[in-house]
Length: 205
Image (cartoon, rainbow, N blue to C red):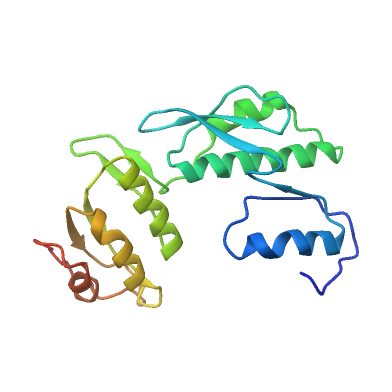
């Protein structure tokens, strides 16, 4: 970003920067002449009430939004929602109308299957397609916050960083079933079953 200048010098940017990106983005945006809005600095996410299926959110530093209901769980989804709202505010400021009412009505209708998706039943299921260490850490944080220690069904592709994913997940699992998906790149179940080292693991071919 720092060395390349785009033909359009005014590209508004909203970010919930983390890690190394938090050191790079402000300088790169300044060099490009991009207006930059930072989560936690220029706008904020304020958690509200939460259930196993949804949560509410208030924001600061944006337009005058009422409390927003989002049909996702996990603290990371509060940041995602606030960032989406900041982006919509940026779009609205460019002249493309995005009414506050449309945002308020749109969020409860959003769908994201397979991302901390709870399916009620006996037992209840929690589906999450964490496919890298960062995604697995997000899942582990949610399990720890909610004090959940489930039986885990785990499968991964052999070319993913599955060992680190297993190391993150194992302390939060009561037991595990290790399986494989219908892919030639699928990790053999026994490869993941050994490092999980949870008593009573049942690998499936």
